[in-house]
Image (cartoon, rainbow, N blue to C red; front, side):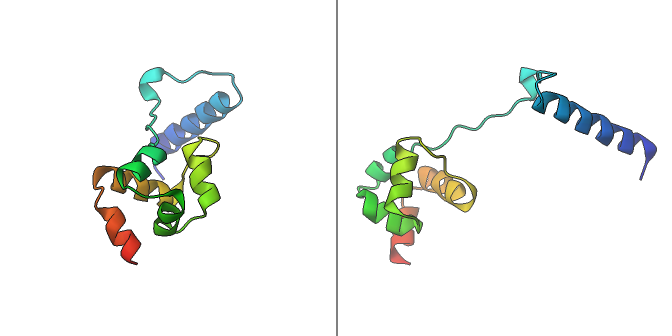
Length: 98
């Protein structure tokens, strides 16, 4: 490995640890946050009850409730699916057909 690349990686890791333990605050220009989808709004726009939406998403009704009440945040494939449904609302119909 190139020595400069190694040094850059090492410096990056040291910065990450310093941020994690609170010794350093990252520059705001380097912090990226993505808004979480509004699960309740997506579901209501689809005209579905929580149980129907849960069935289409392949998750439990309790999880849908938790997302809607922001007690938990969707992650992984479910988060990606919610982003897709938010952009293309008709996708929910395809999910319901599966």
